[in-house]
Amino acid sequence: MLIVQQVSSIRVYLPRDLRSPEARQAAGRSVKEVQKRFKDGVPLLDPVEDLQIEDEAFKKVVRKIETLEDQLAANPAFSNPEMIDKYNQLLRRKKLEAEMKELRRQLKATDSVVMKDELKAMKRVLRRLGYTNAEGVIELKGRVCCEINAADEIVLSEMMFNGVFNGLTPEQCAALLCCIVFQEKSAENQKLPDDLSGPLQILQDTARKVARISQECKLTVNTEEYVQSFRPHMMDVVFQWAKGAKFLDICKMTDIFEGSIIRCMRRLEELIRQLCQVRVLGIFSSSSFFRFSLIPTRPPKPSATRSSSRNSPTPSPRSSATSSSPPRCTCDAWRRKSCRSAGNFED
Image (tube, rainbow, N blue to C red; front, side):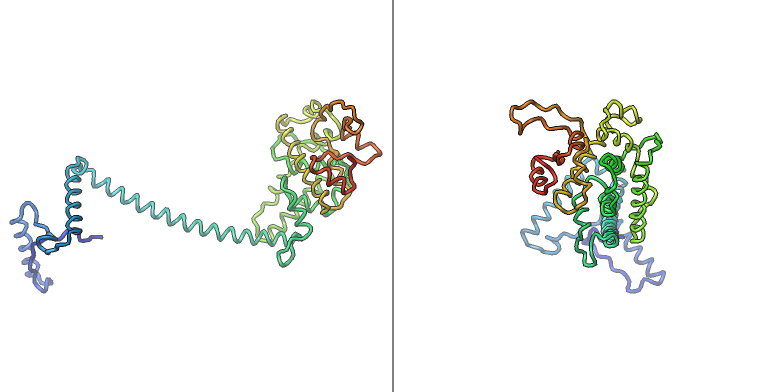
């Protein structure tokens, strides 16, 4: 788009009507005559001398413009023939940056709309599964789900309220829970025994149910990928470890690296502690869950000999499980008081 950049003090009188060829030729001759008389360029309109502007602030601005123009003309890059191309490239860059900024703004607005729709779909899933009521108030299942953050809390809560863990031994519970916390891949295809394949099938059916309800609530979920995310490669390893096998022996049972096994055990211990906390809070009253604290998720540490009978070495979790006395709490010190007050553990 052409804009007026400078105004000359020379006035050329043009005919009133330029539609005829004679009038256009006359206007052209006038312009050529001006160019002939002023070979160095037509004089520009001076705002001070021609327009009689006496404002001092305006004169100061004019002098500053003249100084900057002289500095620009003295710069060698100003006379560079590539300067016009570079200037045009700069203009295109500024234009593209403005367009990119506008596109980012539109993308952000679109993401907010998508996130709002996804949030509504998530709320529908929670309402369908019974975690919230029609008014959005959290129910009992939602309170239990809020206490779990070390694994897929929805699938785990569904299994808890369906009584999946009630008929399982602590070793089976630990083996089943490791499918939820173990995220690494393994090329080994183990054939699980019946006491582990049955709980695994229940876990997969629960995951399919959650995925189906999520899809019905307009939430994008790939059912098979979601089910395959619960990996059973560590079930037999954790099962034998919970039964008292040595770490060297369980490492020979799988091709998974030792570091990955330890990492899985630590995540499993964190999840078990959260389930113990659910039991201590009194939110869930199943008799199976307080036994999770008896699962030896780490090697027993040697205890120091003390003179006091009350401070005698603590028996290992395995020996406590077989004892007729109430199970001994292996939670943190701050948690033992809650366990004793609930009547589930002895000091």
